[in-house]
Every structure is written in structure tokens, then in C-alpha cells.
Length: 426
Image 1 (tube, rainbow, N blue to C red):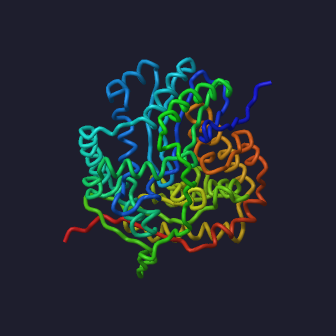
Image 2: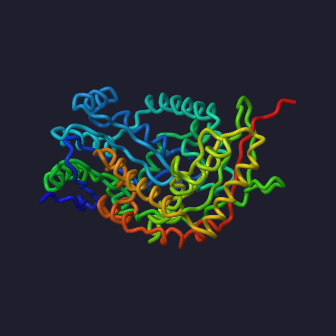
Image 3: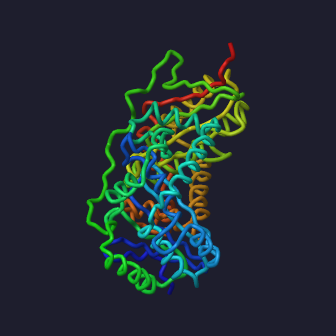
């Protein structure tokens, strides 16, 4: 019988999660408990800057050789930086896994951060920031982050133009020494692979690092995420919104409602996910039915969440884009829906739609090696070690009564609204 459970083991103190599936494509990633939540104002954006630099050269490879080796093994590779983690990952055919693990560990543990490459990448990151500032959605998100959340949680992962200009190689090396350690790194591998073979392969790579007395393999304590969340900078105004911003050259207003969702470790986490999907998870949902179909106010409306300070601070947002004159009506109709759910719960039909859709989202997200690896990696980094089958069973166990029982807990709260309006030319 095929073993479908994730196998966990350590390699020289570094935690490894070997996630089985039947795919001949293998996903391998190295995740660090780092990111913007662990930065200080003078080095804002350094986690993202370092992420770029890991692909620019090691003690044995330059950037061109790195790119060619990934291509020759048929691999896709990428990375991302968030508030709470940085993830470097690649996907390749199963027979090339040994090449992928060797190259990825070389990138993370033997990067040299060449000065000339650092200066070129500084320009690239500045252009990336300009790209975000040209995008109204990105600007809106940045305004919300800056004004509604404490600096540690809300500042942009890319940093400011000033910090990007001033981050040095020495800054990056010092930051990595204090963030990347055996207690703050997770290795993830997903595919049709043998855990013992994977462990043996990784052991070879890490034995070389131990011989080099590599600084990342030090015993730095595991990082902790603080409890502060909302900022005291949130603006109150007579229109009932917490934050209003203006933007030139846009035709629609963008509106968001933000609340704190349940923690990853809350026993009602799955129940809350189904309830939120009933409220705004698709065309069957309450928000879509009322605001899009019945009133015709928006092209798109719904809910989503983001890991503002995972695992305890998950931000839940209601969103929409619409004519400025309809903003107040959007808010009123949304809050009326919340209050109705608090008082009357959700119907059986709506519950079945939301539950089935929630299950389908998990199945779609975990269908491939890359999907399954990405889906589980962050959970594993923060100590939630359930597998896909256990997650699916947790969804199956939720009842309509469960959703209605927690409705008041997650909906009877302070609603934090933000809106971006087109700037009126005087």
C-alpha cells in the first residue's frame, strides 16, 4: 500500500518534509523563516534583496552557469519573499532530483553575492518597485499596509527607494547570519520519491557544509512573530471609512474591508474558511449574488486572505471595484449581509456550495507536485504537520451548524474599511 503521509526527518539539524504523490515531476524547495516582518527600518526590503542575490553566483558557479544547469535538468525555478517567509524552489523530472538538490543547496549556502551583480540587481529591484507604483492595485495595498498596520507587519517587502539604494553586501551577509539557521530553515520535497534516498542525497550536501563550518548551520533560536497588528495610525472620518486615499488616472473606486481571520492553529480554522467562502468565495456566494447579480454594482466582488503575520495574524479582506458614487452602498450592503449571517446563519444550499467548493480548492491546489509542495510548505514551517488527506477530512467533518455557531465570533467585529477614489482634478 502506498504511503500517503508526509515523512519528516532532520539533516544536520535542518528539518526536511518529504511529501509523497504519484507524479514523476518533483518539487524541491528551501524555505526560511525570514521576510519583511523581521526587518528594521534602515534595512527594509533586505529579505527581498537577498532573495534576488541568491541566484547571482556561488563559490563554484556564476549566474549564467546556474541558469544553464537548471535548463539542462528541465527545471523551472523561482523564489518569493513574503511578510513571514522566503521560499526558493524548483520543479524538475524525478530522475534529476539529485542535480536539483545539489544546485539548490549550493545557491542557498554557498552564494558569494558578487559586488558587480549586486549593483545590477539593485537597478532591477528599483525598476520592480517602479512597476508596482505604476499599478493602482499595488499602490492601494501599500497605502493600506502603511496606514492600517504596525510597521513590522505592514511595510512593503520590497522596501523603499532609499533602503534599496543603501543596502550593501555587508548588510545582506549580516542579516542572513542572524536569520538563516538550522532552526529557521525547512527543506520540502514533493513527488514520487523515496524518503531514505532523499535523506541520503541531502546528507551528502550538508556534510560538505559542515566541513566548511557554514554560518547558516548555527543554532540561532527560532524567530517569533510579535502580537501587534493594527496600527494607531488608522484614520477615522465622517464617511464611516477608516482610510481614504486618492489616485490619479483611475476611473473606479477600489474598496476593501479588512478583519483579522482565525489563526492557523485555531480548531475552527477550517470552519471559518468554509463560512468565508459562503460569504464571498464564488458566484454562488452572498456577496456576489447581492452586489454583482442583484444590484449590478461591480464586475468582481469577493473575499480572500493573506498571511500578514502568519500563523496567528491572517488578514481577511472583502474587495470590490466600482463607481465612486456606489461606494457607500457597497459598504452598507456588505455589512447587512454580515449581520444577517450573524443573526440567521447560512442556508443548507449555501453551506453545501461553500463546503464542496472549499474541498475542490484544496484538491486543485494539491493536484501537482509544485501545488502540493507550495500548499503544505508554509504550514510545515510554522509547525502544522497535517497532510492533504487530514486537511480534506477536516473539511468533510464541518457541518452547517459549525459554521453558524462561529458566525458571530468572526463577523461581529470592528470592520476596517479602506477606499481608493479617483482624484478629482480641480
